[in-house]
Image 1 (cartoon, helix red, strand yellow):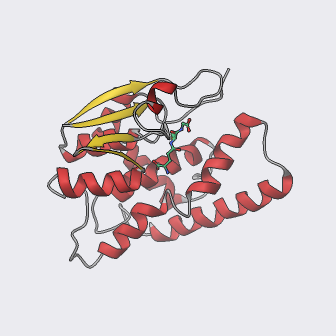
Image 2: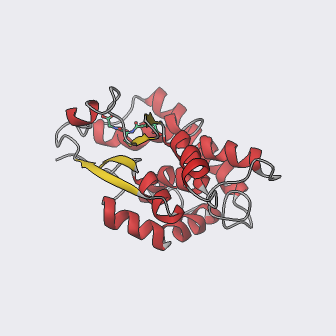
Image 3: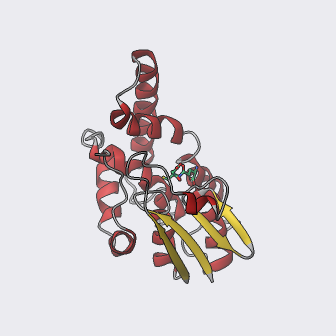
Length: 210
Ligand SMILES: N[C@@H](CCC(=O)N[C@@H](CS)C(=O)NCC(=O)O)C(=O)O
């Protein structure tokens, strides 16, 4: 049995979604963020010293990194339906997109996403990162032209991983001028698997601390 350590309003929602849509049995342990710092609690550091979400106990290993967790769970603990087979022509593209959200996209999206809660960014840094976000969103917009999903014409872990990054952008209105991103995002959040994720794990987005 897989044990998912789920931190409220965090990336661990991805793993709930994967397990729910992929028919993977799991047990969930829930953690609240520190109300002032919004960091994870010490109890999560007892599970893994990084105290990051998601953390998953699987096959005798305490695993972190959502992209790697998604890839492993799809291949070892489901029928593979939410992945792309090794010999599929779009396998390379699937791996590229599965890891893109936490790779190239992660830094600028996360920093510009939390900056407003922390008093904003210095101009030079803001200029650099906002240009990066624009470039990356434009890239997604081109990729989604005429498509419902990122790869292989089906819903995969790559869509789950990208969705988390788009949640913040949707809330900031940055999908409104990008019709493909907007259509794609709205279809993802209308899925019963996503609704179930929010029902079980709570909202995905963190809001400003009081
Ligand atoms: N690249 C990692 C990032 C993990 C990460 O930073 N998770 C955040 C939640 S969205 C976290 O644990 N934040 C709490 C903290 O750092 O105290 C992944 O995709 O799993």
